[in-house]
Length: 405
Image 1 (tube, rainbow, N blue to C red):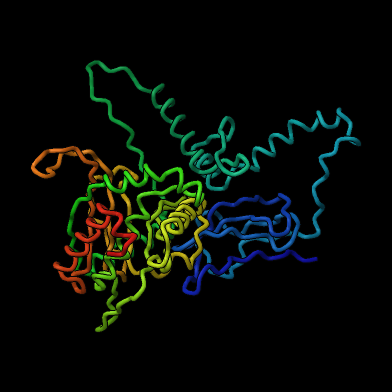
Image 2: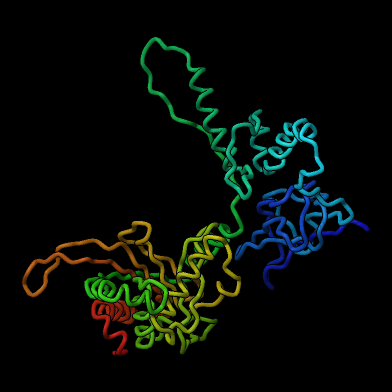
């Protein structure tokens, strides 16, 4: 039987090319049918490419980092190759096993060095010996080789420092590493630049006393988990508050298309989450119709799958408004950039205990700064300020969210 081609898959209607990510299998290795052999990356999602048939991976026609067209042949499998021998040692003598142990170890180690890592090691004249691989199955990745390189370079340079007569300032490392931008990072850069150039973006700020939300979470923490199997977080309060505010200020939930303003009578809320390859914004559909538990379950699921790059393309599309929480990374205040073609984005930030005035008294309260960036072409300043003020009021008096008042 002829070699079987493995082709770069289509990951979306408008995507014509993908980037070869990590090879999960190396030439000469046996693969089972439907076993993942390589990861391909696009500007939206990553996808594992399965083997169409069982056999030996005969050729890898593209290297990590290569850009290939959708449908291009990236590997070939030999389905007639002999399957690997069983690990059963009943019919194998100990002498034979011992005599081949060293060779097997060396070839196994070599097979686990990924191409990108091998190039780094070759450039520096180094071997893979002593490197602990962090990839699947102990594979040595480029990052592992770079770390090993840095450690070895530091030791080598330290041993070559010549004595000097007079004390001099010791310069730090002057190395420059050139790394090609991933499709996801290129798309993020492009879209953020477009947002700045094609929209009249302004920002307005307010602050929220988080005492009410924190009291509810503390009071019903265990009951909520026992009933719904998920924690009650801050994000669900803000999602529901935003949905109520968007009803009162529909321009913030609108989009500009040519000379028309498209008003949405539903709330598809994008929630920014950190993924394995960068920030992604999956969308909670019809968030206005969901309960707190449904919102929390959806966000938890997004966060878990984003770390494994398992977010689906269709989950990233659309969205009428976005919420981003820089507070989880320690941000105290920021001006988030609109996710086009949307007209608004809410930025949440870290919670700090600060002195505030209440009824003529100075008291300590857990406070959070919030920011709304909006497209001034559609949203007037009065509407933007009113929207953010209502979000503040709803979060400070969470019962209003449940009563929709």
